[in-house]
Image: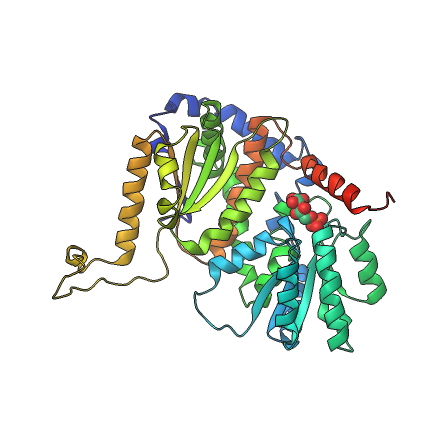
Length: 428
Ligand code: PA5
C-alpha cells in the first residue's frame, strides 16, 4: 500500500461527490497560495518547503547535540508548551515501545502551571543525571519560563558545568531566552522566523528530543520530503491532503462542526493532541472553524461512544488506521470456554481490533456521523514525518478554504492579558 491512503466513501451519503469535485479549483488555488507564499499569513509559511530546505549541516548539528546530551545522563527534560512540545511528545509516544526501560528518557516540563507536577519532577530529578532543552519561539512564554527557572536552579545546584547541560531553541531576536543563551553560553538552535510554533515539529523543536531518544531523524525528514513532493504536485483527485481539506470543509458547510479524530492504537494519543492544537489554533477564528476533538477507540467507545452514536448530530469522524500494526498475537482456544470466547480462537487481536473499527464505522455512519478513513501503512520514523506533513499541508489548505489566516493565533493573547493583569506583571 501507499504510505497514506484517503477514503471518503462514508461521507458520500451526506455530501454529494459532485459537491466535493466542485471544490477542485478552490483547493488548487489554496495550494498555489501556500506553495507560492502569497496567501494570508504568508510570512509564516516557510514550513511548506522546509523538508527540502533544511540543510544536512543543521540535521548533523542536531544529531551531534543529541549525542553530546546523551553523555550527560539518562534524562532529557524538554521544557516547552503548545507547538514547542506537542510534536516531540507525539513522535516519542508513537515510536516508543510500550513497557520498555529505555537507555534514555525524555521527560516534559513547562506545559502547565501545576505546582504538584513541577515539585514532583524536581524531586524525581534530584538524584538523576540530566540535561535540559528549553524551547520557546517567543522566548517569553510564562509556563516554560517558570519551568526553566526551576530546572536551571537544580542544574546550578548539581553541576559546575551547568550551562553545557542546557540547549535553547528559540528565535535569534526579541527573545529573553536568546539573550540568556548568549549571556550564559548555551548551545542554541534557531526556529526560522517563517515557521510558527504548531508547524515547527520538523525543525530542531521536534527533531532534537527525537534524536536524543535515538530515532532516525533523517528518516523522519525523508517521510516529510516525500509528502511535500506528493501533496505539492499531485492532482486534486489523487491528492490525499487536498481531498481531506475539501471534504472536511464540505462537512462543515453541512453543519458538521465538530471533527473527531479517532485512533485504534493508543500510541497515537499524542498525535491527536498535536493535531488538535494544529487545527484548533489554525482554524478557530473570526467566529468560524471546526472544533477538533480526539479519541482512542475502542477505549473511548466505553465513555464517549454513547454521545457519538446518539447525541447532537453536528459531528463527523476521521479515523486513522495503522494498516500493519507492529505486533500481533493469537487468541487461543480454551477447553473450558467459561469466558465464551472460543468463537475467537485462532483469530488475532489485530483482527478483532479491525472488526471493531469496521463495525463502529458502520454503526456511526448509520447514526448520521459521516466518516473519513485515513490509512497509514505502519508505525515508523518515515510515516511519522509523512503523516505530520500531511496534516500540516492539509491544514494550510483547509484554513484558506475556510477563509481564515491559518498562521496567526491572536485569540491566544486574551487569556494572557487577563492573567498578567491579575499577576501584576509590569507593562514593560
Ligand atoms: O503555534 C503557536 O505559535 C503557539 O501555540 C505556540 O507554540 C505556543 O504558544 C508556545 O509558544 P512559544 O514557543 O513562543 O513559547
